[in-house]
Image 1 (spheres, rainbow, N blue to C red):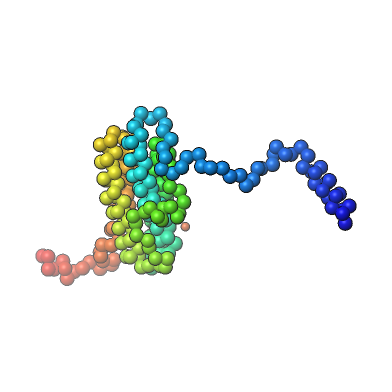
Image 2: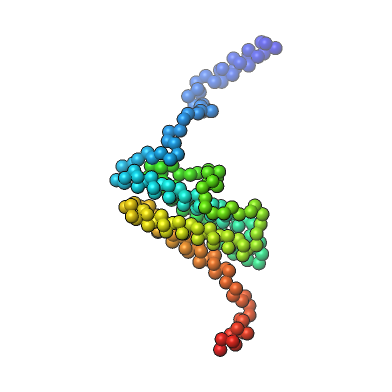
Amino acid sequence: MVRKKDENSARYNQLEDGVSRAKPILHQHAPEIQPFGKIARLPIALDEVVCAKSIENLNQLLADTMTLRDMYKKHHWQVAGITFYQLHLLFDKHHGEQDELVDTIAERIQLLGGISLAMAADVAETTSIPRPPRGREEVPVQISRLLEAHEILLKEARAMARQADDDGDDGTNDLIVSDLIRSNELQVWFLAEHLVAAPLLHADQAKAAVQR
Ligand SMILES: [Fe+2]
């Protein structure tokens, strides 16, 4: 038995010969190279105090955008009713656009020398958007919830864009105005029109007669 074990071990060593440099080195640990909240400045001609403020604001927008993005996917999966198909597609389109915004915001935080929030637990602790239930909701409730989330984002985004402008952080101002605010406003329009009680087949003749 012992002999068999030795033979196996020798064979194993033969197989290992010459490949040690090709083997992955697993289970490595080390302290972080940059703790959250600290800035590793890049030569972008922006004051560190300005970078710090923009990073803080952008991380708030990032957490809220990630939450809104995920809410779109939740509603894409859970939508029900006669408008299922169009809303299933619309929610997924908006999800994709929010996902692009997430990447744009996160990468600006990094280039400002900061650290972007990334993990769900950190996002949940930071977001200003109320947590939806796990269960399914009716379409009007889904859309109302999305509209409320958009408005929270837009309100804080406008204030943060003004702050970046005042501080001379043109790149952050441009990102918030050109990318985030414009995309969110457009998505609000596409959603809100679904909550207009317009007749589907028959014009409302009774109301038309009153207006004449
Ligand atoms: Fe899908």
